[in-house]
Length: 217
Image (cartoon, rainbow, N blue to C red; front, side, top):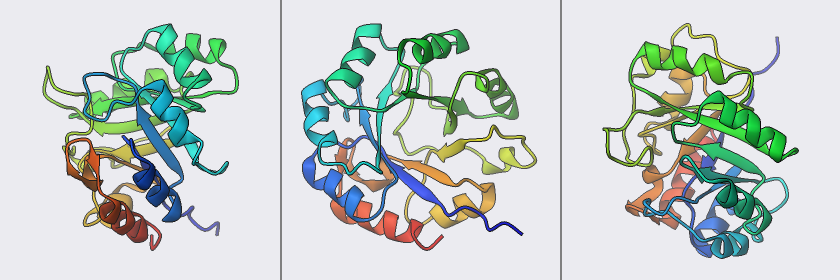
């Protein structure tokens, strides 16, 4: 029988050299950089460039966007050095297809906000155009689309037919990541607020504790 792939983790919303270094040192598979001015985790293209330069080749460089303009994505790739586009807005599948055509070689991920099984079913329309589907908790209208520490009912994923590549986010931290991965079968966990001391302020000790826990899964 084939062994189950080990669990990996993306630390999202990084903005300082020490937290990027901690993510690398403790084994993160991906580092996320937010390009959304309304977010407390927003970074400039120049900030992102300085941070992505610290990453070894095997760590993915994920740019996180919310209904972005073309120029924002272009500069995040050209200046910021990202190799993956993660979309957290209301982008339709056609937008993902257009981005794939415009940026060959760049992976395109789509975050799908989840509160009900119908939200999961809606994710199916992104399967042909997304390299990965990220299931995240649906946040209240008018708030940020992610990074708020909310989680959805993981039981909604029971028996759900996933795309080939998918990840889990929303309200996960060092204390419940083992339950999250074991309960859902997720092999990639995306975390942001769960390793923060305050909104937008990543904590080196929390990054270390979280990734050390993931390494045991």
